[in-house]
Length: 278
Image 1: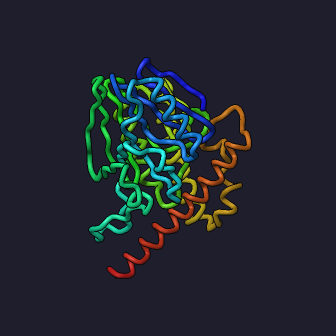
Image 2 (image 1 turned 120 degrees about the horizontal axis):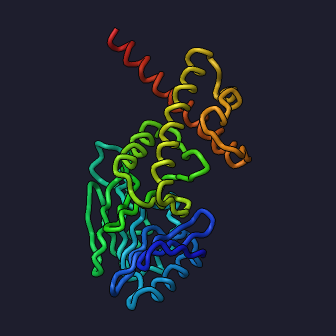
């Protein structure tokens, strides 16, 4: 995995779409996220031993693998901090992955609200569920003021909007814009630093707002299906970029589809509410 040194104490291991953010204490290493492959986890364990005398002690998962592919058998003696995975708000029990239940050597802590942990070197990890997505976590590393999140943010690409989470995505972006971290490490593992942090968040917020407005007009006024909107709402109309490459086009098309499905769901809910109160 490629190593990116942010500070003498913080190293990002990045390989394709996988990343691990290693924070060094005096004796132990804390990793925010892990690769899914055994080779990737082995690389994190080896790097942790190179960085601190006792190696890896704590793993904070900002997003747990949906298919439970995390190789827990390699993590004996390591504690994992993860988000709650309740499927329904009224259900008091959590949907715990079976592999965690079958791994007694791995201590697991669940974050339902806000939690603060520290290491022996004075780093503070402010951990909390992401706004609108309680099954994911965002972490602020202090005193460096580094935000680690599982959203897909890039200086040259619009944010990745998941179906049914348009409003929640906007809330998160606005919250992070208000907090103004010095560095953002998103799901791709590429650090965004300096002035690019605010510029990236501002562009992402404006993109979501503009795409929502144009998609809703297309659906409600022009009565176009999302398949047509993909070509009607040009990416250059909502995201200024000197190079409109294939990756940018594919990201935008996926966002239009997610946005359209989200808006259709909201329109249906509004119609049902109106029919009940008429």
